[in-house]
Amino acid sequence: MTNLSFEEISNNDLKNLRSISIKTFKQTFAASNSSENMSLYFRNKMSFEKLKQETCDPNTKFYFIKKENKTIGYIKLNFKESQREKMYIDNGFEIERIYLINEYQGVGIGKKVLTKIFKIGKESGYKKLWLGVWERNFKAIKFYKKHGFKKFGKYSFLLGNDLQTDYLMEIDI
Image (tube, rainbow, N blue to C red; front, side):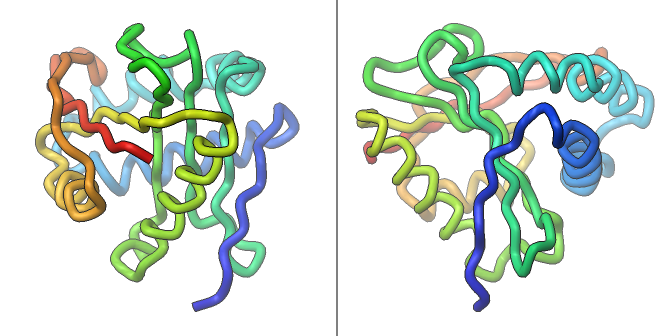
C-alpha cells in the first residue's frame, strides 16, 4: 500500500476541510438520519465560521489524511481544556473526528491513522486516548474494539434536533 501522509490543516484550508467534512459525514450518517437534521448539523457544526474557530484553537489539531496527494479523510484531535464536554481524562487527549472516504475504509488505512494519532499523543506526553462513537455506528465500534479501545461510559448529543447517544471509549497509549 502506498504510504499515507498527514498534513496539518490551517485556516487557509477551510474550504477543503469543510468539503471533506461534509462528504465523509454524509457517507457515514445520512442513511440513518433525516436530511433536515443533517442540514442543521452542517449549518451549526461545519460552517466556515465554526471550522475557523476550531482551527484557531491552540489545543485542537486537524490533519488531512492523504494518499498519493489526494485527500482521503481527516482527523481532529483535542487536547487539554479543548476536549469536548470537559470529560477529559488525566493524561488523556481526544479524537473528536476521524473520517475516511468510504472507498478507503477496510483496507488497513484506519490502523495506520491510529498509529499516527498514538505517536502524536506519546510525543506530547499523553498516556490515554479517548473518543465518543455513536451507539449505532457499529462498523466504527467494531474497529475501535479490535484495536483495544474499551467502553467506559456514554453521553448524549444533538445531531440537528435528534438527541443521540455516544459510547465513550478509551485506550492506554
